[in-house]
Structures are given as C-alpha cells and as structure tokens.
Length: 252
Ligand code: NDP
Image (tube, rainbow, N blue to C red; front, side, top):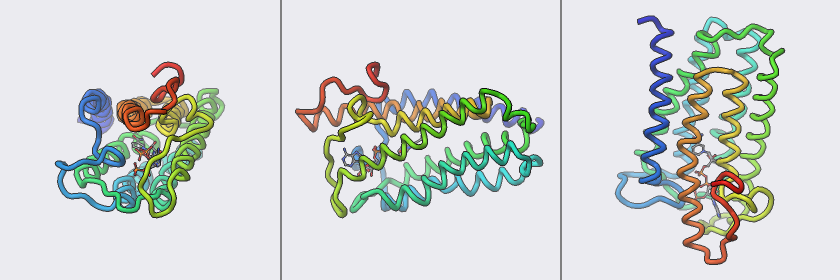
C-alpha cells in the first residue's frame, strides 16, 4: 500500500472515530473536570494531565511536519505556525492559568487523548508538509483567508471564554459559579463553540479531508460535553438563565 492510501484510510478512521465518539459521549460523559467520578482507574493532577495529553499536538506534530519534503515552503510553514499558535497556547499557557487545585484527571482519559493527538498529528501534519499540495498561490484563494479569519476569531473567542471561567474561581478554590456576559448569555459553553469554529476554519484554510476530519472530531467530542455541562448547570443552579442554550445560540 502506498503511503497516500494509508493516510487516506487513517483519515477515514478519524471520521469513523468521530461518529463513534459522538454516540458514546451522549451516553457516557468523559470523566474529567466537573464530571470526574470514581470507576475510571488512577488519576494524575489536572494541570499535568493537560500538559502531557496535549503535548503530542506540539511535538509529535512538529516532528512529522518537519519530516515532510515541503516543510520549508511558505504555505505549509504558515499553516504550521497557525496550528502551533493554538497548541502552544493549549500546552504551555492554558494549564498554568486554570484554577485546578485538588483536581485530577484519570490516566485513561490522558491515554485516550495522547492516542488521538498522535493519530491526528499524522493526519494533519503529514498532509500539510508532504501529501497535500500547497503552492504559494494557495494564499490567493478566498478560502484560505475565510478559514484563517474563522480560525483567529475561534482562537480569540476560545481563550476569552476560558478566561471568563477562570475568573469565576478564586485561586485555591474549586467551586463553580454561573458564567455571565457576552456569549455566555446565549450558551453555556462558548469555549467549545469557539474551539469548533477554530477547527472549521482550519478545515477551510487547508481545504483538506484531514482538516475536515479533525473539525468533525472536535464537534463530536465537544457538543455532547456541552450538553452534559448544560444539564449539570440546570440541575445545580435553580436560577440558571432559562433562555441559554448549550452550545449553538438559539438552537442547541
Ligand atoms: P470546561 O469549560 O469544562 O472548563 C474550563 C476551565 O474552567 C476548568 O478549569 C474548569 O474547572 C473551569 N470552569 C468551568 N466552568 C466553570 C464555572 N462555571 N465556574 C468556575 N470554574 C469553571 O472546559 P474543558 O476543561 O473541557 O476544556 C478546556 C479547554 O480545552 C477548552 O478551551 C476546550 O475548548 C478545549 N478542549 C478541546 C477539545 C478538542 O476536542 N479540541 C477537547 C476538550 C477540551 P474544572 O476543570 O474544575 O471543572
């Protein structure tokens, strides 16, 4: 089998995994954060978990990317910088800002995330620097700039939404408050909405099945979690704003 076929089958595998993940997570909420519960084996500190499980998206991704023959060309390099903008923030900034005193994440969740990030690194980095074709004219396409704009809006919105949550909790505490203001007036999880928009932007700017598979997986992972968060908020806070939806304003 030539590598292009192998890559395509793994990408199809990611699409299949997205469908499976979506259905599974509607039944079993991933046991981390507010949904942490017994029965999922040993755990490690939440901050360490974030760093360890997301690191492959920086380092394995970078190694696969630089093994590609187009790695030093303008458009692949630009795409690599865009990808790393998100993941350097996720690995080296986000975990050090969250207020995660006493919080743990099961190793099973960490292991699953590492596996996903390694496969996703192969699917996306290999496509960008080896199997895809990204001449410099790629940047003349409106799709590149539309995707880039969505990515930037999604990234900024995701970081802002996570920041609002962080400020709800005093240092050293582990309590929860009702988030308010901005997009929080419309949905319970603007951070998930914005993260999904970000990766839809990536799919559009790379105009690739690889990017589309990751965007689909992100939605499959985060929409059920947003529904679980939304249910949890409504159960926990009797005064939770009634008109607020889970993740898509006015819809879901
Ligand atoms: P959450 O919204 O569940 O939590 C984010 C942080 O805010 C946590 O530290 C959480 O604490 C805290 N927090 C949440 N709600 C409240 C509240 N009401 N009051 C006080 N503190 C609160 O997000 P996740 O932890 O699931 O995800 C974190 C980031 O990672 C997000 O930006 C998300 O988009 C991204 N992500 C991306 C995925 C992908 O598939 N691409 C998959 C998963 C996450 P605690 O942990 O104690 O609940």
